[in-house]
Length: 442
Image (cartoon, rainbow, N blue to C red; front, side, top):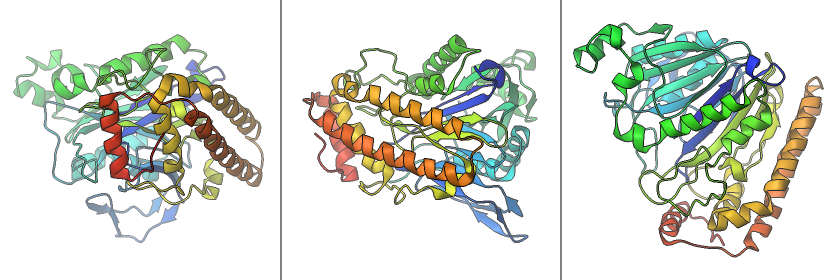
């Protein structure tokens, strides 16, 4: 379960488009930030994706990815040309293919590595989808997730939405503000589509005629689309974007990713609450959490990137980086499914999981400091937009160091506040912690 948003330049306060995404994945699936430089490849070479091989292209662009540790693909990312992509799991009456093929995350990464513009990326993904198909388990280490994919693809001047079902698809150019979640959003209006998309719905009796075709209405399943609350979360993010339209800022986008519907939110109070900022809990629909978050200021070919590299944006800090400084990142070892204190992702998990033990009181001990530190990072990173790569790289390292120190201090504050444990929530998190071999959280 994820949420991906775009505010085009006419919708923002300073006429620069802003992209944002929360990646919601299993809580013990470490996700990390990876920089891959531009490369040349031998003609006729092959590329091993997560499950299958495909032909490699001669040149691939430099990319900055936020990716689960075990797969080739990524949940979200940016390339050297200022192209950004985020994907969503979507569920259909057409069963998702369980045979290993390309994951949606594989197609996302390929789009970033092979395309310069959003329209080119749409075509890259379409071509791969039609030739190789999508499918296979999108989770690992005992977890299972099978789904179709939608993609929000943008740069400074243009945004495209691509929604897929098996090898069928439709795409539409987006203006203004838009958000996607774990549900189809296209109706009967789109700019391009696969030849059999509409015909298939008519043949199966999902719609009487092509003139009445409605993508979301005809292809959506009932169970996952409704119980995953993708439509509810999309309605929330759309409303928040519409409220800010014309004045969307980096801070407001980060605020949307941190959104909880209840101002007195407590993740221990329900087995059914699935907010934009998602925390795992007890039950079949609370098995995921926001494991990484990304906000990108799409300023031409030099996007300013803010990533958490850690779970739960409400407990995390967005740190700034640039494509030409990303190689200086040192986040420790890539996080896997087991606790590792040397990993940025897992070091933060101690703060996140401790905060959940009395969320209403414990988050208060550092939320203000989080916002102030983040404000400083944003102001200084924007001031450094034209500075040398060396100066910006030094600032990037400083931000990650300051964030790590702040989170270590916040953990001490949090643990000084008495924990409150409710039975079902404790059962869930005791299981997660045991599987990850997390040291006791107090």
